[in-house]
Image 1 (cartoon, helix red, strand yellow):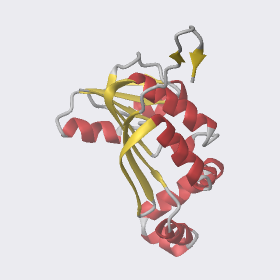
Image 2: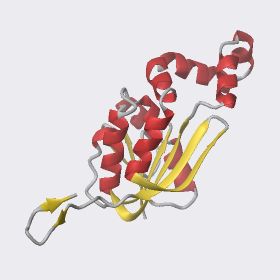
Image 3: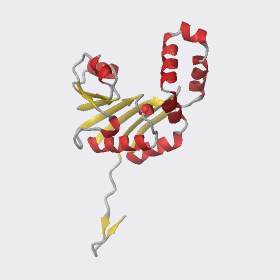
Image 4: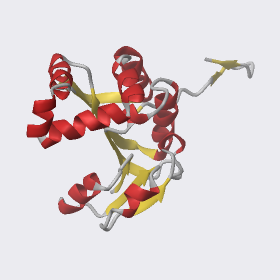
Length: 191
């Protein structure tokens, strides 16, 4: 089984997959510095995930955990990324996406991030607050467009599982077959 973890960063997801016994692992990230900190068995590729360079229909599973919300344009860049993922996944392949999603819980977490005392006491909250401060523009641009983002996911993938809970969207889908133009008996192309 060929598995790729996109926006893999330091490779925490790759290490988890390896510990579960998966062997044919690849990771892709735009940061050479983050990739250099990975020390596991996966093959690493420096690259821009919206322009994924894997061969057509070469992967069984693609995982994106918290990467799509980093893209500058949450509509066009996500659409281009999903189109590429549909191309590289085998017809029986699977896309797994876990991304932040604006829920009442996440709104509460955002409020807690603004409390200095809470950040000093809870390291994970401080890390989240620092990430939000550093990536404010793309993060909130992503959170403000749930319907168009879901529409793009559904346009490229048939949902097998979709859930919004605890400030996260979890989406698992299979590649939607590409629509091929129909040719009528006269030789004309029809949609």
